[in-house]
Amino acid sequence: MRVLSGIQPTGRIHWGNYFAAIRQYIDLQQGNESYYFIANLHALTTVREPKVLRQNTLDLAIDLLALGVDPGKATLFVQSDVPEVSELCWLLMTSTPMGLLERCHAYKDKKDKGIPADAGLFTYPVLMAADILGYDADVVPVGQDQVQHIEVCRDVADKFNHAFGEVFILPKAKVLDNAAKVPGTDGEKMSKSYNNTIEVFEPLKAMRKKVMRIATDSRPMEQPKEPEGDHLFQLYSLFVDDAKREEMAALYRRGGFGYGQVKTALADAAEAFFTPAHARREEYSANPKRVEEILADGASRARKKAGDVLKRAKKASGL
Ligand code: ADP
Ligand code: TRP
Image 1: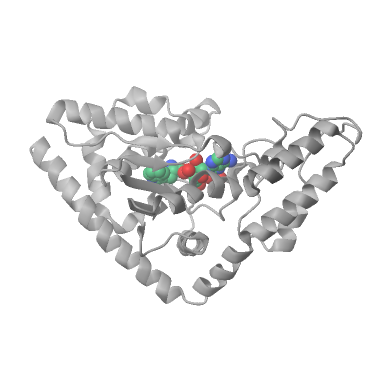
Image 2: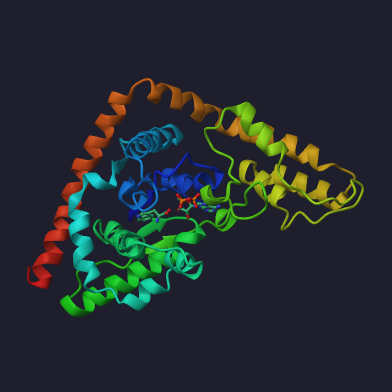
């Protein structure tokens, strides 16, 4: 299987990014050919400060390495280091119906709110399709919100194949049931744009504070509660094994507890879970040269693969 995914360097990564996407990267790098990249070209649609974009890109590379992306197994690189994909994006653009892009939510939401959108945002899904098709990826590990983009990718590939023969492999999204949509501190989807995130590399004290401030309802302590659908319980479940999860579920159903107790248990579990990655992050941060080398090596491997696919697509289309 060939696995590929990307994350935008638009800010520090949060629990939603980790449990939906990055955790899958780490599992899937074992025994598969895998490509993971930092989507700085996509980030240009929102980040307009060169210094910030550069810093975010390096930070995200360090985050991924600290969390367990292993350059001995996976190819880790920066999107803009592989120009072949941008060229492929043009070829795909000529097979992309406007209507398909008009329906995509990132563009549609902005348009519906009357916010002016640029062509970069409109064609965002085509570049994403080029990212995926350019490496012959079979599987794309992501959170639920990216599934629409992968459907667009399949449609674009299908149209191209229809015109020019079987050039591209149609990829599948891989979404984890228990982390398809991780809730934030307000119970809505955790997202950098909603100011409701808990970051993976937040100093542990600050992280505990955020956990203690997670919004809960005002039902009395003694009242039994349903764990299913409760966002605090959902977050706790991400960090613990089945036995601990069931123990907590039983406590909910029995009642007679305060949400403060659950928050403390969640903060303890999260702290234990991320402490080793925090330590590894320190090591990589102290050695940015090593990180640059890993990215350069990743880019050269990625260029080789994307170059082969681009050649195939150009030949098929008469270029
Ligand atoms: P954000 O929405 O915070 O800007 P990104 O768009 O950078 O996050 O997403 C990077 C990856 O993390 C994608 O695969 C996306 O589907 C996933 N993801 C982001 N937020 C969540 C969430 N709350 N639940 C599940 N997956 C998420
Ligand atoms: N659009 C994705 C996000 O916001 C990032 C991304 C860019 C991506 N290219 C990709 C994800 C290719 C998977 C495959 O999260």
